[in-house]
Image (cartoon, rainbow, N blue to C red):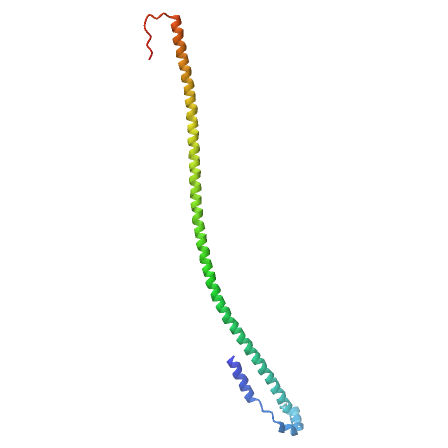
Length: 169
């Protein structure tokens, strides 16, 4: 930016000054311009107008660049704030994910424990039911044995006269 300003200043110094007194010799200047391609008063005036336009556009460019630098500084500040916010948010999300994973592991462990417990209880229930059934069969068989013994005992009493005493074991 400063280089552009210094070049424009040097260029303005090099430009010939507008001098109204040279108007009398415009005719000679036009002939010299045609023959030797040298500048005349109109050319110098036109060159000054272009320079003034260039200086005006330079002012616009400097103003625009100044605004862009201001926007860049504001953007840098916002970016810094946003990056801090994003870093904070990502650490919070990381903590939540870790906590959720820990809870998931705990719930999985409890579900597995419940599954094993229910399975074991179901096996125990089946064993108890099997024992009940076996006890029922045993009582029925004992009842049948007792009936058979009672039948044998009553039929022996009827058919035999007891000569010897009967001992029951």
